[in-house]
Length: 501
Image (tube, rainbow, N blue to C red):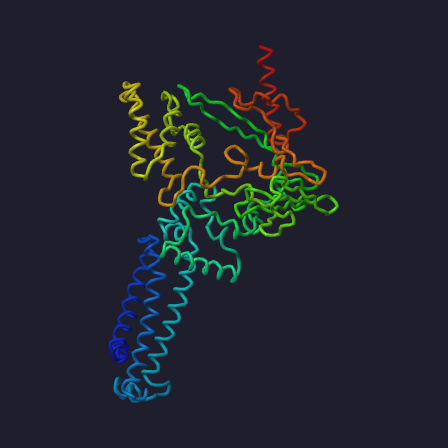
């Protein structure tokens, strides 16, 4: 059998095209099998080697087969000989003579054809599986996708594959995704992509097909306590607390109404925006109990048609949770979070102020940024508190490293991503968020605007206070449910005990 394959390879190498083709087929097959075995054993995990394994080598394999066929076609055309004559010249008579199951040549061609088909089918399946992996999406085009890959790995959805949200189900969605991927390769090759890459809100799958596979609005009920810690830029980086009782109810029948009322199956809110960024609303429609819609039109956008039908969208999860995975932080929130988690030692004098100042400087590239952040913080202590460079050296080094990490996570010079490049619409602390719709400019025919009452979505238990529950007892206990009610009762009992003493 081995002799027959060697004879077959020499036979098909009819000219330079055939020899190149046979060499490509043989070498790429051997290298592919070695790489595939290495990946199976876990020795190779690099995405670029994956590209070689599942895209480049299979392409060379098919190219080799085509070159062999082209070589035979060209030889026949140049010599004017028939296929039978060429076969007689290239192979021994005993290889061509037919037996009970055909000639050895026919059996060899049939077996190799079957092997080729199996290999190509297997590679195609493995290639699709590989291209569906998060590591492929994040690292194959490293310079372009590195910002998204960086934020993805530190997000609440780091264990959810990219394709679960970005690629729909079925053959049609798969074809669309691969065609879009082909255009992305062209954009990358010819430097046609935008910097920063726009958020693809225009072709995101509906939340009912993605988010709601795990998060079911009908089960959003009750209230939850959220406490936000902010640190001042004073000597002690003093903490202050904003505590909110979040009303997260969906408003389903028999359940309390809250922020998720917007996505309840019983309701429908839709809007038209100026563009796909969905930040400036031309009008908002709210379905009424009788099935009709009440329209709120933006009186400051009279130049836009209020019967406009393009860029119309039904409100779903991603209208508020638009950075549910690729989360870019604001500099102050990022520093506050690291202090809260104990990654930056708050006992360091003016550490919040110095950390924030280092992050807000403009740097031309990341390398200079890393050096400048170190210099900015270290020189401050060298000039004002030199003794701390020895007594608190470890804490200072750690703080510098953490601030540098914040910068690397959020700022990407090559892609023109800086603070605020990707606004977060959840809430309204750093961006318009809720106020895109809840503002006095969107009014109905009677001149009434969409409510801006804070208590629609939360009750305020403290706002920038020393006590995180300063206003808790101003809220009637019967308005609380679940864990919030238990916290309220517990704190009341503790408060009463303190009064007795």
